[in-house]
Image 1 (cartoon, rainbow, N blue to C red):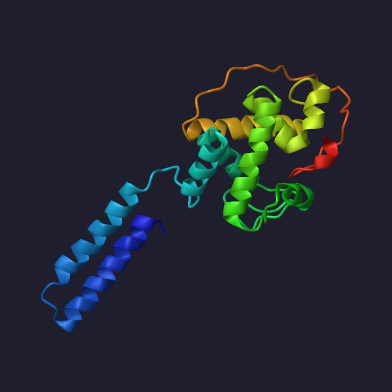
Image 2 (image 1 turned 180 degrees about the horizontal axis):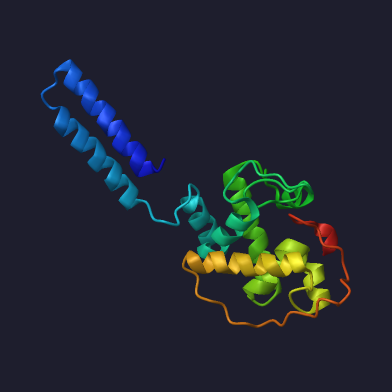
Length: 204
């Protein structure tokens, strides 16, 4: 049942209870409840998340686009602070334990995970000339892999990761980035092993 359907059903039950109790304002109470629910639904942006304020704060702190950071978080954890990958990456920004330790954050704490992920993303943006595609590839596969490949490395997972995060970021209001990198042929032999689902400083 949809949210609207649930609201209608709840309103009907509430109205019936009020009628049985003999409350004269039952209709007004039902209308008030339905109106309040519709107002709340209309006020919530379609792309809102529970962490928008923390994302905006961290993005402003490190001078990065909040839409890019939010897109990264959606791809990494789908806004689930308890997310854990098979490789051991944890939290909203899926930091590997070694990366989280190097950043001095607890990835199980949403605010710290967002701050750590934003800081690491900013480091990669600075390292790769502000190119979001290369920075995201570095976030996923490690900066060493990006440097060795001269751009987004030829890993299917990393290339798909970059495309998805940039698409999410555009949904959240980020301007489409200029295409500054050329994907290498899929047959190219990876220079460094990819760490799936998180970050690992061993690839630097």
